Amino acid sequence: MEISEVRVKLVSNPDDRLKAFCSMTLDNEFVVRDIKVIEGAGGLFVAMPSRKMSDHCPRCGGKNYLRAKFCNTCGAKLPDNRIHPDSQGRTKLHADIAHPINAKCRRRIQETVLRAFDEEVERSKQPGYKPVSLDEDDYHSDESQH
Image (cartoon, rainbow, N blue to C red):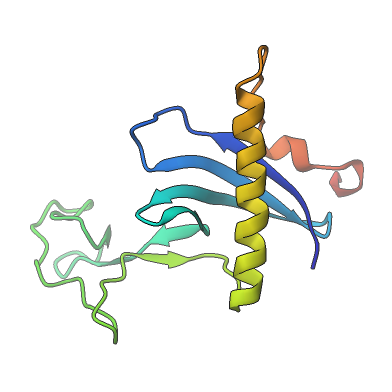
């Protein structure tokens, strides 16, 4: 697998831990979007795309995020004990959508994305800097159009 391109969209709020959104193209054929660069206690790290975990309202069956206090559908108060820790005692509020399977792949992705992030930060300091676009249309080639 070759990481053929990384696009970095810097986040402008300097007080936020989220520093950038990224997209990564693999083998010039497959794009992974919504990769995040986050400032953690030990420095910058890469977070893969994820979705919020949810469950269903016991009253109406409506779907709600685990941190929700009230049902989005019927407005009923949701039970407080809906978040259950995993086998290591951690609460899981998000599930990865795409992720590396082993440490070697994770390291390679993290190094490549963080290098692209550093390069984008340097470019952003130049006069006339224009932020990178992460829009879907930029990835479509003539071959994929029907």
